[in-house]
Image (cartoon, rainbow, N blue to C red; front, side):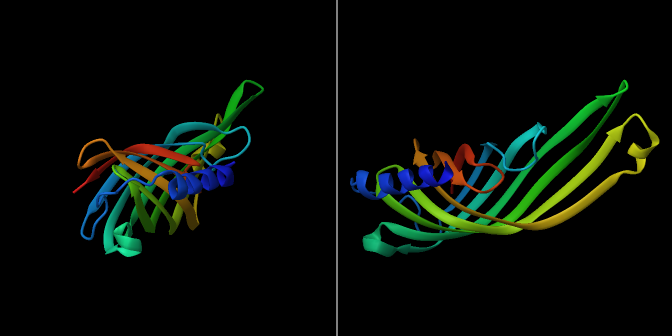
Length: 189
């Protein structure tokens, strides 16, 4: 599904939009985005989301003027959090596990402005996923059962920002981050 969305988005941005573009992401521009995720990859069968995926990104243009002045390259960061839990009742006692995930990463982006007000981009993120788990239940085991671990986090993604004001945009991203689809607001300064 994600591959089909990625392919459709790429084709649409390459062939469909051919209006003159303004410089939406020029050297020195900084963009901060905050949003929520839909379709988290974290957790497993039977887990319920207790905190939806929330995220913040930072993107700064370091090179512009590429591909006839319509493309640029950015670098930045990614911070995201979500939590979920699994619980059951056995013989009248409640038991379960709570997990939280925090992803901290660095991102690189390639932007292409094919039309006014639309900044399309793709990129990669490499970071760290900090995972905490806690058992809970109606027994003594729950007080001593906490664990944490971490692992490499990575993502390939495509996205777009639509600027409805000079420095304010709505964004959407698909990829493999904290969620399959990320939506939110971006502020350029």
